[in-house]
Image 1 (cartoon, rainbow, N blue to C red):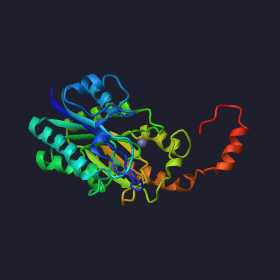
Image 2 (tube, helix red, strand yellow):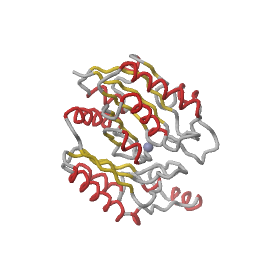
Image 3 (spheres, rainbow, N blue to C red):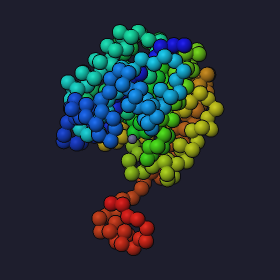
Image 4 (cartoon, rainbow, N blue to C red):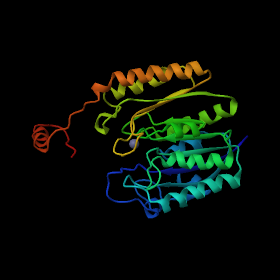
Length: 293
Ligand SMILES: [Zn+2]
């Protein structure tokens, strides 16, 4: 039985949004629980469809909860906010000195200073805990994954549905992957797509995203995941990316290359057209079913 620290810090940053995201946005409850600390995390997140809930339900080890905080999507996270929450997480891990950590992250957080805030958080954890320390993170399908974030994380698991319905399942996979890290060396490969995917074309209910995500379980390796990216962020790494883990490096590379080839071949199919307001109203008036605006 090992001791695992757990924490969460989620934000999807739209850098074109004029507002800023402050500590108050993380502290108060929105569509998600309010900022929660310590053992209250077990009570608040019990059986919810949230990654950390899935992790808690599945992980067989002794868990040491630090803090979980999420703000609704919005503009840049202020530096003060990022420093306050990441300090608590990093210092919490350092003082617990656990065997590993699980982090429930979004993957598209941008602060006033850091384009890739999650990579900065993991860099600080690595600085304290070293490069062999097991770090399992779960990310949103809209994560903007940089090479640095991939390198700092021992393993990454990503939602496979959009609209997202597999939050807890993703946390469960993060727990399985963390155990795989404890079991011994793991080969990994990272690839990025050569184009951006519009948010409106990313739904896994429709092709080509449906086809791409349906293929993920086909890979007989440890784990292969795909993030579509969050292109409403004016940063270098805001396109799709692939994380691949396997027992052998050749398998990790081959799986990532195969999926990348498929992703790039589908570029022209990510072309969902939006209707003008006039067309949309005309379309809705002719519909016999429910209409959502
Ligand atoms: Zn998302």
